[in-house]
Image: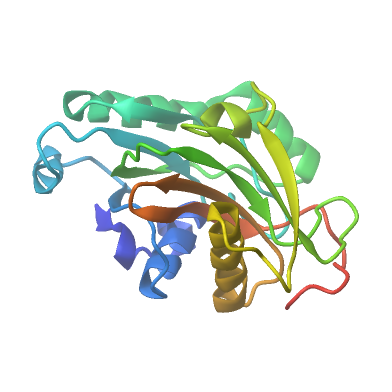
Length: 228
């Protein structure tokens, strides 16, 4: 197993974990965690507070690239009790062989890997959470598009619920409120990664804004007015 802050090699830890590891090393707030690339060691969980629950998420080598995101194709399991983490890891890994992922990969002309790394992170208790595109993903206009829901954002990401609101903010003036804080951090992530416009999953709890995932916007050919 590899601490998330040490995750570097995407061919080993998967695209999602490698990107989160890079963000941590750049000083971006990301929930603590580790990457399981072979078998899980239950003793690793002893470093977390008693009663801590976990988010168990996929990290395939083909995920979160500029060519394909694989968003929603592999399993993520939230609110996992400590004793249930090994079973959750196994369930996430089984999603690699699911029909949905196979169809997506075939349509994108991508070959699925033989194995799936799994991220185990501290489960947040967000006040609200959502997604932030650092440019409009449809028109490529140079404005941030933020969608959010109250509480956990998994149902929004999977398309099970509509956002409470969709907010558009200028890249030059992001505003003073909490969505302004999301926008400022999203633009900082884009700047630090130097990888063009980003599709960012975020959450806000009592400690502030956290980044849960960041990947290049895959719907654009050449964004207008965007950094990178």
